[in-house]
Length: 80
Image (tube, rainbow, N blue to C red; front, side, top):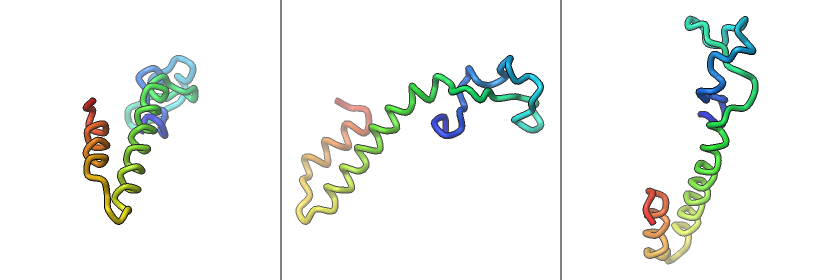
């Protein structure tokens, strides 16, 4: 969500948009500038997407390599 919604602590209740109410009922404004959390999370999301794509490709093979799949799952779960 941080990558698509610009939800980052440094953009919520920014000083530059005090006159806006971007979050109805709470009166919060969110800055239009990109927050730092996007830069932190995007590489992790991209790596996860690459691992998922590799797993899908391996599973489509006639004879999936179980060792390779185990390695993808280990890397994808934070191991190694």
